Length: 93
Image (cartoon, rainbow, N blue to C red; front, top):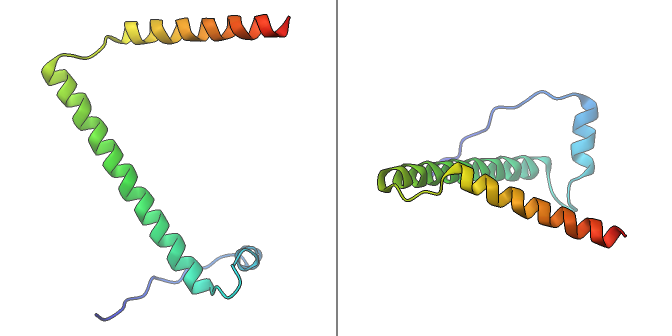
């Protein structure tokens, strides 16, 4: 397979110095940049998949109609928050 190149980018000299300062021993700037790009691509793919699954779950819940009403969820969260605040207040005394 023939390799391709990533377009070069211009950065301020101070930033390049900063990047070079965090390189691992023996690591080249090219390897660092490729690694950063790979990690960013993986993170974006994971994020897109997470959103896709979330949307599918929302649509399934709406289709089936077995969701928990917002008011019930908020009320339970508020009750937990109140209980936590009461415990904190008791420990502060």
